[in-house]
Length: 385
Figure 1 (cartoon, rainbow, N blue to C red):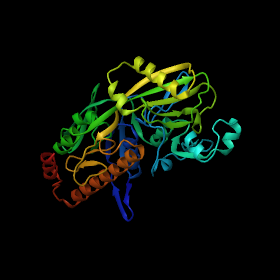
Figure 2 (cartoon, rainbow, N blue to C red):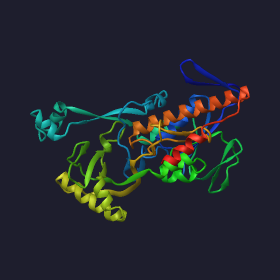
Figure 3 (cartoon, rainbow, N blue to C red):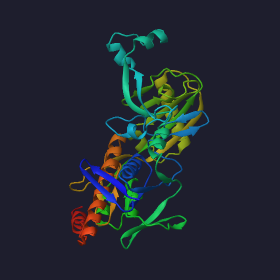
Figure 4 (cartoon, helix red, strand yellow):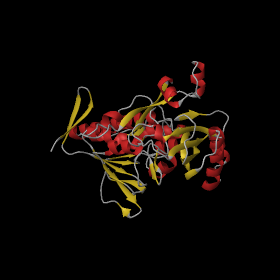
């Protein structure tokens, strides 16, 4: 069966057999790359070490309901909505999220935040926070992954070249499959051991730096007098988001709050245990709420690679990194800022680079032209780093 691969308007390549690509990491960058490769006629296989999709664009099920425990919304232009086309009888997996403007903004417009709640809802201005997955961020990740082969609980520990193909090893041993290319959509410290076949990529990954971040998931038995989303200055808490204010979520009690500590506070408490951090953030949340908050669920979690501080950089490769000779690439927030739209576009750019690289290789093979690749370029970039 022939597979047509659309790379750009007017450029179509027909493969005799679909190239198999290993995409390591099922965050938004990896899933986007795999989805775009699938659309281009390739056969991507996504390997994910954890048991869930989405990376920081995911959700966690708890005894009090779902929490989006990482990214709270998606801003900027993306193709995620096109991937998440709804089926008959289903809600679309991506919806805009609006919240009433904060008290300060309403006061500037002469509004009374303390007036009757129904009257206030009718007069408050709304602020667009971005788009969110429905009924959770995890649902969006599942919609993106729907046509893909994804293997959860599969931690890839080694990757090496065997002739013209890549071979992978997980905790159970060598995977009995060969791949024409490998894409690393995981944090740089996890990607580095898998990128050692490329001196240039390994050097770029070694330079990446991340900042960790503490978050608190809080269930409250009583209503909390805070907007559905609010940011704070000069506080251990940087922002709060109400799960029950998002479209497609249950608005019944208990309320569910996502609480994110700021960067400095997270750094100062980087080595504290989760229970201590949960109690400290709860105290700060109570002070912002201005009332007693009795939690019926409390869980603190530290994102070890919460935000990239210094992403990988290589000349001429702003959104993703690709070693054409080794057929090895890196995408996601190892390369770009830790924002879902940026990570998504990185995965998209990665898919284009992979597909174009394979197209050139097959064209050279068909003409009997030796494949000289770009090994010397990557060695020079490694030396420069």
